Length: 247
Image (spheres, rainbow, N blue to C red):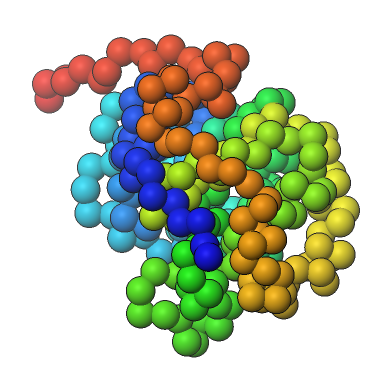
């Protein structure tokens, strides 16, 4: 039996997070329509190969940069280094295949401030059909792909990180604390990890074994506690909202 995330909806969880805290640089991979990005209050970077934004997502942000390309191409461009931007908080919600999610995390951590935080979406499926890697035969309903593998990978290869699995419905939010930009463990083990996990089906790994990898933390509990996974050292003053200037 799957442990489905049935807590506070993830969109509201992220909205509350961004209303409660502002960080220096926030990155979102897999922005698409910009729903979650719209609530961010600090300097933001969004990466998506095909945006479908039709609303105001800039709002009171002091800066917003949109890159309509794959995350691999974005990181390879060296744009973050050129800007002198170090990531305090990132949300990874791109291609739902484990190798993409793992590369995104490696690149996020490499460009993070020490002690930064990364979040993953869709790591908690509630049936086997939604975990398929077959892009030509996706289920009609929700599709999480095989990014569920991120949980056991991080637990196994990066025990130095704090990994929280939040019951934000419908498919969870994984929060990873204590990023270390000098740690190359995952990059060095990337090929071996792919060899072990890429073609592994959840049915073969075992649903109960996957369940044993984590216990859910309450999303609403974290909201009420003031998001303790985001340390004060990562927060910055929100600053004044932009004022209207007449022509």
